[in-house]
Image (cartoon, rainbow, N blue to C red; front, side):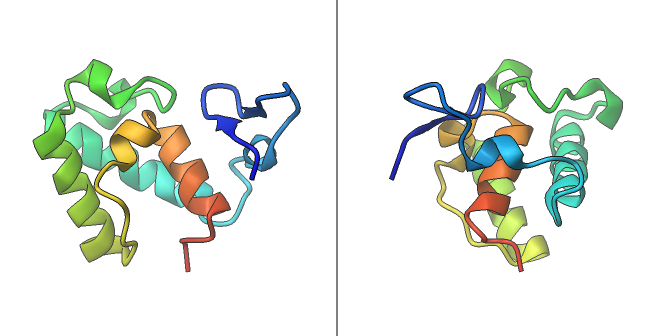
Length: 107
């Protein structure tokens, strides 16, 4: 398996990876982005439109407790069991959504 750089969605060789083909039209992607954005905004008590999907969640102050809550919410509300490190492995809302869509975790 070729490593993908989640920041620019390319392989180590600079070639576009599968993640580069994910767009807002990819089934499940936009719904997941919207859901994640709303959740993060709720955790931070800010308006969803203040959350950029390409900004690392840590930059907003999402800590380990909030990341575990997000994992629990993904499983409970969306039926998506995820690793507890997903926020650190995929630092942005976009990267998390792309990961979940490309790993075929979404139903």
